[in-house]
Image (tube, rainbow, N blue to C red; front, top):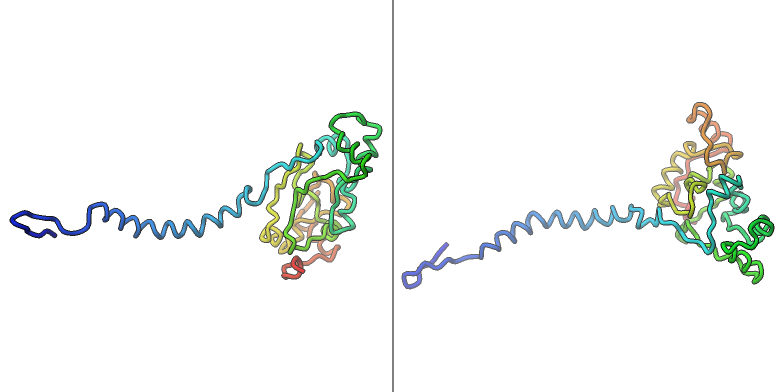
Length: 225
């Protein structure tokens, strides 16, 4: 539109850039709104948010590859309460010294072990897997029913420094609780990271579920008590 003022044509209305702004609001607003909803949903599922694939540096260098693959040390030798307690437990100084009082007993890398033995204070191991306080998890019941260490902890025997590889989210836990038979093995193979069914995997694991009286567990009180 335009108006006449003393014979001059004067444009009336909004500046040209306002049209671009209006189009940006009309078309970009919904996209931005959707992004504000979707972006956090994607972020909370990333390894960064879940603290996965981030090696946890311990107070002394402990190479699981050497101890498990070379020396064939079983998981339960160091984590002695994993099959009888809610908590897997950390290796005590006495457990470390059971070998290293004779082997590499003067190695600089074992300074923290020697200091712990002298002071009587536990080695300050750092947790790799940490569940919220409102989540109840019992190692013993899972181990006793045939859930192998590798199911939750991944192939620790291949790690120089242990890291969290599974998300440990509610959805991840429920995926197993809805189909527990798909994650079972003979209890004698709990700590064997290389175990695989020898025949019909589905039939074998279904038989294990029946043998150990395992059913789906999806009620809230199974994990929140």
